Image (cartoon, rainbow over all chains, first blue to last red; front, top):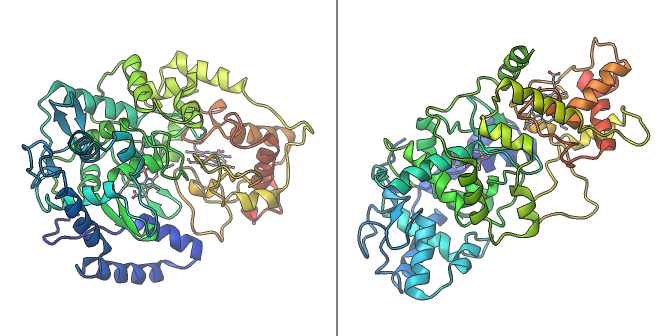
Length: 263
Length: 204
């Protein structure tokens, strides 16, 4: 599980669904997966590298003083210690939220504009995703250590846990519907059991991730939104909450204090 | 009754994991968090975030409500079943067999008028034996109508289950397809035929 080298994880989910559509068998899917893995671990062909580079450039043009929790301008290790409570904002923030907050306070880019850019489409970059990829990359191979001292951080975890079980919308799903069981699958896709700290930790430590069929980098925010608090199984990443995601994220990240970030 | 039903639900879903710690956050606090998070959301999204009574009870008790609330859910959901105007509860299995593989429908910002909403039963159930891409959140339904007497009672029970899973099992993980307006009563009848008709591939 620990990856000494920089590596964006490949999405088995999307590969698996692609094979469902193609109706091919498991053997084929594995060799194709191997090929992707090869490609992704090569720094010259893993497209995620470009996101990190783009993110670095964006960071260096106005965000250098952004405080990610370890002091203004300190990026190294910051991702591994988020979400956390930020005194200046008076609330718990995850990496995406904090970056958007810095863009607003340091660059005057409205928060809502950043939130609206949380996703990139094929061939169209999202500055927010590039920035998150850059920030995450500076925590490569570091242990995840969420502070968890502040009352608001504790409250956020409790809320996140409740939200995990909150059922709503047309399909009555909660996160637990799909991620609360051992050995469950949706179609051929194995579901991570997030009530198991080990699995939740592994998941949290592996984002952001490069999703082949999206041809772009996805951050945790994307995933929360795709499945959604609204939890429509086939939902598209649109209309994301600004604020609920960090709570869920914190809840899961907290479970994972033993894990290390590898991306 | 409750215990037996619950046992079967647990078996069906295979090993529902209980949370390590149960922390208490008031419902008011949770509602406030959700409301703040979606303050600027579209009307469609807002429509999705508010819970009905059953969703609220199931969430609060993590799908394991105490006896009196369990009974209240059953009663409420049983009263929440509508039937096709034609009163025909066995529809067209061929239509349903196709839609059981279809995950389209009610996506946020992606409602294409005229496009058929699918039940996507394969996401959670095994059905026709030759389809290998099935999920296992629900029990296998392969051979569901085989070796059974297909009478009005079974047809109605099957209809009720698909229309409103929680009218049979409170806090079931299966969506209340008809009761939530996800599928029409006519579509539900098609799925009944898919499960019960001797000609359906499910019962090959």
